[in-house]
Amino acid sequence: MKARLLSAIVILPIVMVSMWMGGLLFVAVILVVSVIASHECSVLLTKRNINSHPFISSSLAGLIIICGFCLTMTSVQTLPITIGFTLLSLSSVIWMLTAGNNNSSTFNSAFSTLAPALYPSGLMMQALLIMKSEYGFYWLILLISGTSMTDTGAYFIGKTFGRHSFFKKISPSKTIEGAIAGLVLGSITVIVVCNLFPTLRITFLETAILSALFPLVSQGGDLIESALKRQSNVKDSGKIIPGHGGVLDRLDSIVFNVALLYHFIKWIGT
Image 1 (cartoon, rainbow, N blue to C red):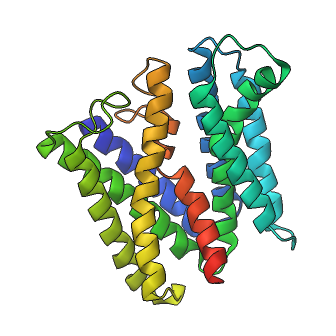
Image 2 (image 1 turned 120 degrees about the vertical axis):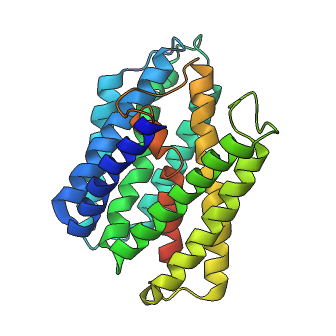
């Protein structure tokens, strides 16, 4: 617990400063975490004897983030591109969850290295587009606070009061009590933040939709990564963050919310 809190105390200011400063500093933070997370994801596949190449995966992840940065500097229509990357990321997750180690076809050999690059980088690159949008800093505050409080509620309430297992075969430590607490706290946080920043111009209905989807998608992302780790027989995706595990362990619940929020922003037209 102590290591977990100390890590959060160190990481949170770095993230907040990069968001406040924006520009290349924010791009660099997104690039670094995406490259490391993709490397960890590729390593998870190798533990299942799937012929993935972590160095190539992480390099491709870096290129995807650079692609996202280039999109922020052009006037092209980004929506078809981000929808494409989101679908590719979802396809990559499905493939990684279902892939066996006995298929040596050309497609599977290539996708075993490409999939860890698309997840999570194909989603994280959209954080750069959120930052570039009007009131990007406030949107990112909403993203991080809503996702973090979902995680916090699920972790602490589940650890303290949890009695009934939730998806025990995927993650034995998760409980129904924790999941409900995460949903409630995450929803309340989204509603509070939306009202704290009226400049975002979110209607009551839009706030209700986002407050319902955010914690659901957050916990879904967490379960997806838990399933990947379960298949690889590991507790954490890495050891780089004391008390938390790997970078992918910290990004799992936020990556799909990044894509959700970006397309939500485009939908409401701000």
